[in-house]
Length: 214
Ligand code: ZN
Image (tube, rainbow, N blue to C red; front, side, top):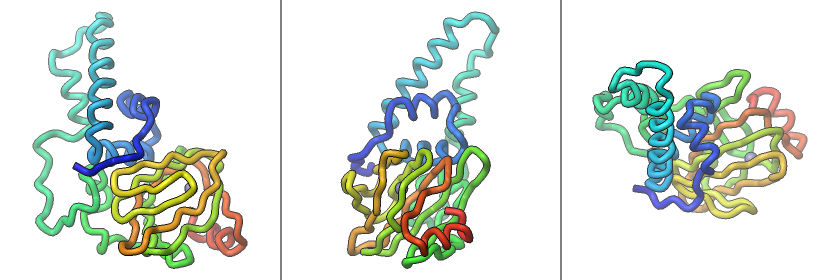
């Protein structure tokens, strides 16, 4: 299991357990949980509480296995297809359903300054994308109009909130303005969910934004 230093908050985990998060954030939380024992343990607790509330409600007759069946739908059943042998393990299981298992097979689109992205999902509630930041490169300086949730899958980056490596989650909102810089040595791949477009300071990133929708 990955050593995770930056964890997801309880309110986001509870929202995930309740199925209340937008799809883009659901994907990031599910991927983080699959990499973090701490998040898995806390999520189990919230799901147990949810189960107890259902048990005590008494208003409707539930089938004995309805909670397990629901959770199995949310988290995938144990009988999921085997991971192909070519999987290199960068993408956690929840992500493989939408992105496959090979970062080299992703249709990356350049967004400028060497950074590439692949949009996985986008609707009015938010978007989820993979970001590829070459080692030593920076993401353009930007602020946020809403919530941005970033999960590191490969390599590491640093900004003024610290250093983020595989399994770590950074939550950014309107108050954070940052310039994430990928560490030297290994290209950084992140899974990012946002519920509103970013705010770029530089002219070139702002122009590029119109074409790539970051
Ligand atoms: Zn950001």
